[in-house]
Length: 108
Image (cartoon, rainbow, N blue to C red; front, side):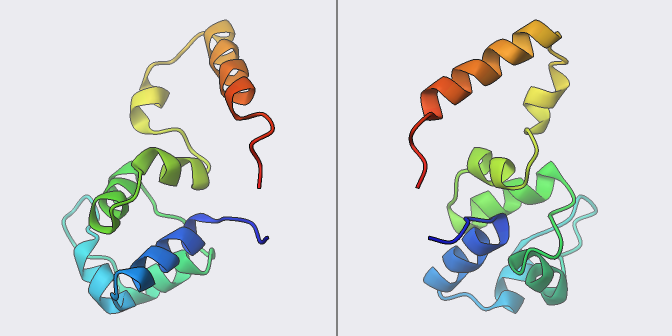
């Protein structure tokens, strides 16, 4: 089984929904409300670039019907809400231990 990537998940769901890259790109907007380009989407789908903001991750989740938290995970970042909490080291560690315990042995 190949590694699951953010770009791969976005591409698979886009294809499942029957959308072209150009069609999906027009639905994903940056914070300035400008749509992303089909080339930028192509780069994301091929894992050459990552969405530049939480806003864009939320847009992909909403448009494609995917879970935003999972997309953030695949993008290698915590969502803004969690980052803004500025947890002390012991609380962060506690959360990571709980996460690992919950997901342990569930690979593949």
